[in-house]
Image (cartoon, rainbow, N blue to C red; front, side, top):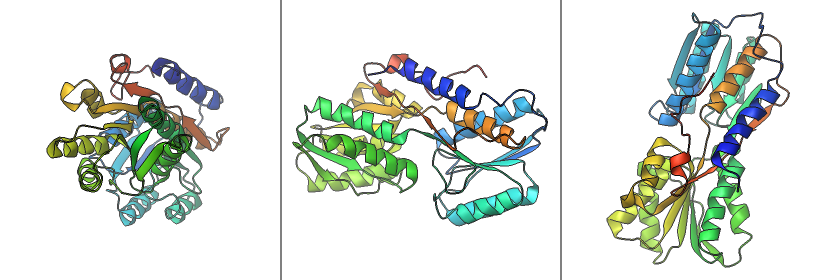
Length: 319
């Protein structure tokens, strides 16, 4: 298995290759950018927004950056995009609430001459999209489960909001489980809502329905922590949990003996994603299209064994 450090290098090298034509000598300065994310209460989105803002202001210290959360309300995100258009932003960085339903708003921005770059989740019609390789993330997280269970046992896929990132993680996980006929998937359709409370509620249902569970894959770290809390409340400790994100909370959990049932999380690079998105935006306003419309950032597995070498979301990077 490739190491965390190796995959981080691959991610940034791939970004550099994809953006080789951009960055230096741009004719048009960026003056204003709008950023819309799922929730400013989500630490991952806060890091992405802050990193993007820093990089935009590095390009032009006087640039105005407006970062807002749509709180998973698609109507609110439509209004935010309308506000960005009215403000005449140079480009929009968009974490789309729905990959298809948001398309009319994207087209409206583009008709006004404003490029739209999707991140974390793809969006139909966007000028470009930058996401974690979410199929890979689901695959490596669930391969850990299959290996640790020696290909036998009862497993659960704790699903989530049906954005492309979540759908892809589940696809990757199912690809792995399908290779092991002695792995029985007890459930794969419960929505943990992407949150700790949602994960707790979903897990409470599993613990009531299923007397024996080998492992649970959750589509993100907040759900993993909620699932672990539900298990502790129920006095259940026969199974373990893996997830996707590599968040600061999961770093702490992987170092905490009291949350030993959480074993691994497939990481997301929340520096490479906004860095790539900003550079594509700067290139687009100067008439330079990316070589690829979709850029996938590799994922690496963070475990209890390697968490101390993991460069997490809050790591300092050279710009």
